[in-house]
Length: 379
Image (tube, rainbow, N blue to C red):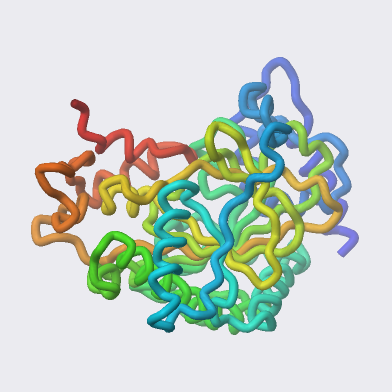
């Protein structure tokens, strides 16, 4: 164990050594090959973050939310009467309004026991707190299937790394094999897949009805059949004012269901201000992705969000489920739903292929609405 700690100190010091001949890609590869992750750097006791994590002044210039808007926050919607004929229309209206104006909302009384929420967070935290040599067994870069544990999925595609490590588990349509998932969180993550998918299906129904469609329309479109889970760990950062937890971006998928612990950091962009998203006990955070904005022809909005580097001693843990479709149209294209279009409401986005959306995602680091911009019909 002492050998592992000493080794981490040496690697951290090596990565941290900067000079006028700084070779970013060389240091990125040294960090990646070490398989220590950000957790390893944090545990080593460094007081200065390596240069590969330092973000540009423009990114760092507005890390704090505006003092003008400290009372505004994303809506919270109670789903306890979701199956009540008397109350459902009001809930549909609330979800529609939140998805249109904020792109983010929290749901309470969603049917998942608090004990399950706690167990899921605890299990993901347990994995990230395994000894470094045990975590390193899962460290790899194989985006798209199975299991991947790595620091920054876009490490080689971005100009500055962020202060987080992530465990990815692909759940559907090709499910990760049980033996591939770390035992520390295996049972809990497979259980969470079922719970989060049930919540997503409920929300998809409400969103569908909000567009004037049948409740099952999004289910018919297989919106919850392509999904993957990410268990993020944002360890304590010695210089949180010099880096990010996750840079500002939008999700390229249709819908996201987010579970997190009590450590703050998530911010949402609303009316050109950054809003802190406060924890609601027992709540789950839902956000609209780029794909849903396109499919709804702009009725629902995908908005920028980010996570600040963690200034707390305790790690920030979040479990994120991303949902999007498996079934494409016969010509392998997708775009705004035809039933939402009319002469009065023409399409504002063109149809696109699966290849286009994948090429856009894997050609760069996380960003905001670059794919939406690409398919927007210019008048």
